Length: 461
Ligand code: NAD
Image 1 (cartoon, protein in one colour):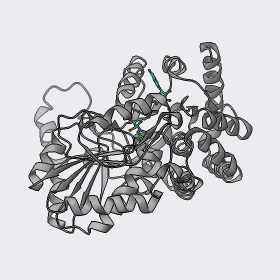
Image 2 (cartoon, rainbow, N blue to C red):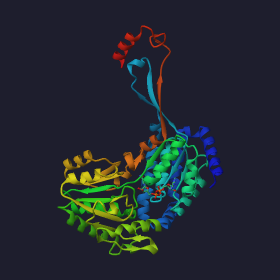
Image 3 (tube, rainbow, N blue to C red):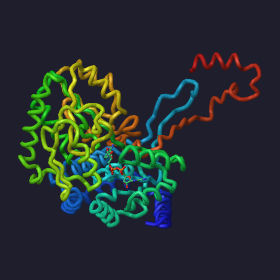
Image 4 (cartoon, helix red, strand yellow):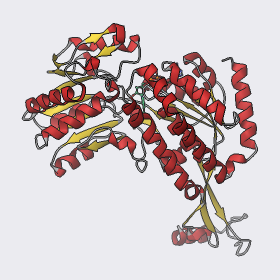
């Protein structure tokens, strides 16, 4: 799509925003409900498109792409009136008489750029926050999942005013073109390196950004643990979507006392989930493309493969794989894996696991499995991550009462639930004062007023 087209789309959205329609909360609720209807009425189309792109099962598509998204919409529909109301806050004595309030207002026209791993949900869930807050939005889905990208474009074009929502399809060239235009906010989900490019481009137009990035999310397993349950929850969180999940456990740090037991349990779980030959399982997804298949295949030559390891380039298939005896200097420990390969490292004392986590950039998620509340508190206190879970993996993402996002290299900003509304709102801070009691000490000439000002500030400050 040429630069002229983008300028045209933006112009149309600016006019739509300028019309004031999106300021009306009933209008926002109506469009959010419409989005839900569109998803519900086109579920089969959504299943088909995502399956064509990633060979995901209907059940995984439902869990990973539809259920949470619909939950986000329902939550926003129920709460948006309250979120949009001005909120009174305390007024300092120095401003007496007066009142103070915070008044959320929409930012304007926003750009939402999505990745390929949950190609439907990761474009539309940010849109829920953008619409709830009263913005117009341009969406750019990933070019690596073309069937889903095309479906999003068709569904949006058929059901929404182009001034409110428009979809622009394309790859890095189109993304670069879009980022050359002035938006009121850029919401980006993708890899850390591209996130840096997006932040730099946005800086040129002084556009605020939300960056939902990735990273190496550790999963630590303590010796005091329910091994079977931990194994199930780790294997599920890792091999869901064939490990192509931003919050998937990236590497396993396990106490040597329970390592063999845990790995044996994980092998049983994987076989239980996907059978002896996961390639034949309708529930096991494929790697998105040849480039990622090749990248992941190159990670299989260090350490000892104790489960999986089979690959098929003709189908971009990589079996759920566990690699034991991995060392910190191995290639697989350098950057985010983003695939179905789980390296396993052993520790003797929890301190070692904590220092390994802290030697790497701050991750998007951290998981800790233990029956010991003391150890869980310690891990939370002594490490940092965008979010995470104790005794589970990836499920925190599904909660619309928890703000979702990264810290440090794993991202900037938050969304989901009210955090999504906030990400796309300007919190206007207003003091309202009556015309009475207009004391003269604050006005020039100031000569001789300093002692009085000092006393007043001490008293009122
Ligand atoms: P990516 O960064 O390659 O692509 C994301 C988007 O950026 C796509 O729309 C793509 O077209 C666009 N893009 C590509 N090159 C660009 C450029 N030079 N300039 C501007 N835009 C460009 O990410 P991906 O491979 O699609 O997704 C995988 C990554 O995303 C992983 O690192 C994963 O952890 C992360 N991720 C994060 C979250 C989260 O919520 N934090 C969710 C999903 C994925």
